[in-house]
Length: 137
Image 1: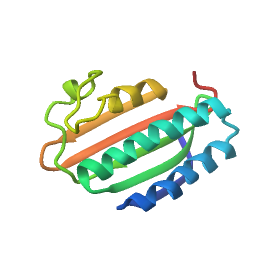
Image 2 (image 1 turned 90 degrees about the vertical axis):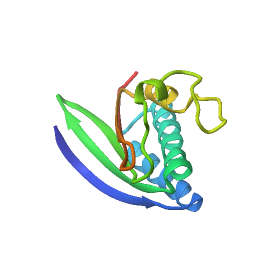
Image 3 (image 1 turned 120 degrees about the vertical axis):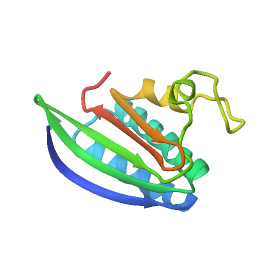
Image 4 (image 1 turned 45 degrees about the vertical axis):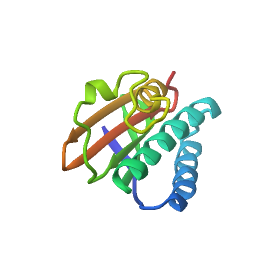
């Protein structure tokens, strides 16, 4: 895997969301990602960044343009130092919510991207990495 571009953005308040979304769109456009795939990636990124604000009072996102096996894509890594997720398996189930929402966040996000990885430790925080390839489904 080759990282071609790497940025980091701090997300600490609601006003940081729009510039973040714009940067994701800029990178997706740069690699020639279709509008449908851009929309999937931006929707997933928006959900994850809002979770980070809601549950962990913000964090950081690493944005990368990557290349692997002739494919180009965007990898986003959301890292926070929030309370962590006690039961990731439960959190990944449709309909599960701790925040009085519809509970579509994490499982819905997983369906929107090509690759999804989550790691969390209670009391230490959570890291979610998503990748969407230029020609992804």
